[in-house]
Amino acid sequence: MKNILLLHGALGHSDIFKPYENELSKYFNVHTLLFSGHGNTELPENGISIEKYTEEIKDYLEKENLNDVCIFGHSMGGYAALCCALRHPERINSIMTLGTKFEWTEEQALKESKMLDPEAILLKVPQYAEQLDKQHGSKWKQLLPAVADLMVSLGKNPVLNESSLWAINIPVQIMTGDKDNMVSIEESVSAYKSIPNAKLAILPDTKHPMEKVRPNLLFDLMKDFWNLSL
Image 1: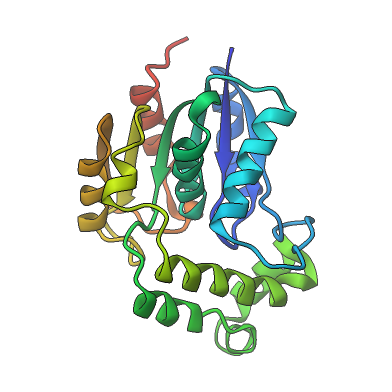
Image 2 (image 1 turned 120 degrees about the vertical axis):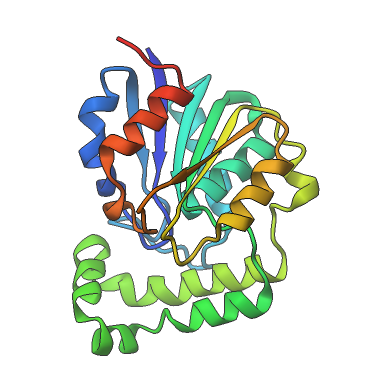
């Protein structure tokens, strides 16, 4: 059986893949990874970065001795997966990304990062604060500014751009929801056109959060991309 690694986004959690694990386990050995600072993992003293998360994927594949791995990455998980394919492609078979933002500018990253103010979230979106506390414990208030710093550093120096995406030569499927207010269809199309062996899928009536994605729709796309049949 092939291996699949499921990667959550920034401020996400590997638990979001629970609705998918049963079905996927018919075709794959299913692996999930918690990025540092998320869930019950420690927030590194020197902060988090896309480079650090890229290394965490590589380290996980080495530690578990996984080869020819299929990766599904939601949002930032997809970005880190593609960075890993760029730097350490030897263990990766193919990648599907969903809701991954490719167009990072300093101005836009600063704007996004300002929305990650723990006190403002507590005040304005208490149910989201409650979810963050449930997923990450009390350190969610430290995780938010760390993710904001990660965004700003991506804005200043995006790792994935037209020329670096061109160097990814494994099969990739870029996917975004047509109602995603974080990721534009245009930037997804542009990334798809930059990767030599890429496919593109736009999911109808689909917003950014993984919890809002209809599992059956995503399964169908996975089965098609990875040519799965029992």
